[in-house]
Image (tube, rainbow, N blue to C red; front, top):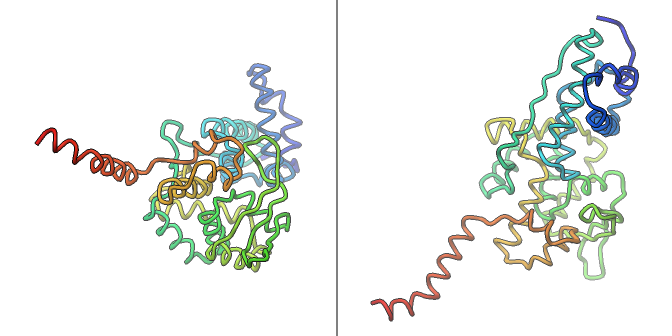
Length: 300
């Protein structure tokens, strides 16, 4: 193997003309954008080329979907672009091993919310995991508030603050949070007792937080709970679960749900709310009871 001290970004800059020599200019520019974003994520661009692993590319794909709202198809394209650089490096003996990246299943829709049984199994497994206990508390916070992963992590660097009002209620203040990708606005998130307990526990754990360990534990949970490393089971599903529960179980008005989640457009909220089969059964029974008397009178 050729000895080298390239970082990933340096290698791509030096060899990009050869890597993309058989591609169109448009595709080459798209790949450049994908590589730039990968380099920015978790400082991958500054890491030695030999240190990039398949897991790093998977973590990047997860982040694109759950933090930036990209589709599985788009995330796959980004990961393929990164894989192409590593494949060129392997073919030309700059790295010793190739990297195999499992792509997301584009044919099947990702799970839109966790069922009660899944919630119990996920939380039970995470609670007994000692490698990264913060994943359990972050999950509890997301389940009870609908907060994004990126918003929760703002607590780690004190970008978000915890405040108590004159009534004794505890809130998380987010000075800048995404509103449908249309700029950033401040937002307050009210904590119930479970969310408050999660925040208090996380205060003692943030010094030990590690991005790779977080994704590693979440990936192991997918395997242990769902029987396979299903890449569509993302942390972001907690947010879908929160919205779905508000709409189906608590009958919360959609406008209120949008405000709770930091949406400025109800169309975005609609994407998060899924109709539960139990709700459909309840509706069918209510309609049945509403017309039952009149129908029996006319059609004995």
